[in-house]
Length: 388
Image 1 (tube, rainbow, N blue to C red):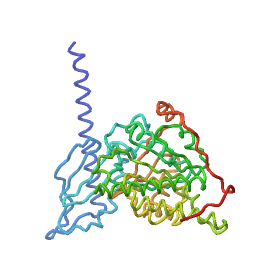
Image 2 (cartoon, one colour):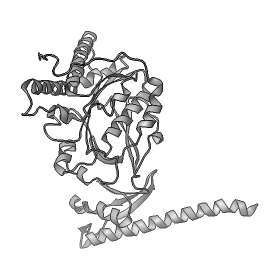
Image 3 (spheres, helix red, strand yellow):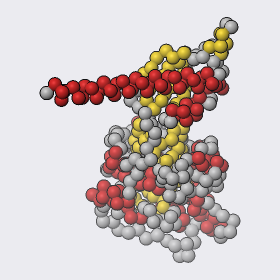
């Protein structure tokens, strides 16, 4: 009996001992890197290196806290993070705020994260992804609009479906979607019968009609808010939120080879989307605007400036990355890991976006399917479309 009780005690002791040894090894590596890179400053007649003053065990990492000598230039710390990560073969984060903090994380970002693993959160919150620090979420009531870019098959549309599923499961009676699926409706037409889906547009003509209806809703909401003296939906009794999803916005860009009426139609669509981004957030409208080909034309300035959440999956060039997240980096995301993304609000993070298959999404949302009268859309050849 004593032997059986001793086994977990010995195992626990071994784990503690292993943890202590790992910390000691990491401390030695950090000190060696400081010395090899000459990270320090002269105090008196002596060259002084940062001194370890505390070690803290966090949920996902071990934090080493260092006192730095006066006069240490911040530039001297720039290569430390990259070299430590390569030497320790673990993610490392270095921050310098009075004290020097070096966080050594226990695990790398996983190559795949499942939607079924996402924790439940309250409010108008959606998961963005998981990394070495844990789960990251976004609150659409705090930041109402989002732009996303990414080469085909790297996870952008899966991200949209994941967000849509999470919102429906957590707000089945208060969320509604108007979806502009300019891949011919191949991705979202199958969800038209969900009670939360108001419309699915699959070509520019249908997008025009959908956006025209949204413009009417926008004007009605504005009148309602003025009448009640409201300025922001989060401070009103209104529970409903309206999400406008645009998948493949490049199809809404007017081109020189097009006939004038089509160029006018597409310009009008872009102007409504810009108006949603500019004033819709306070009225309860949330725009999620996505493109495979980020350029100044496919991602209009008004939309980008009013979308404080920016997401980029892998892109082919640094220029395309800069269009979406204002800096290079998306072109360096791994080419063999779909779902790896850079998310940027006030700071930049790399995450693995939760994966949900079409089959799982359909199964989870089947309960919300209702019979609907199919809306008939005009075609470009039926009649003339006039613009106000």
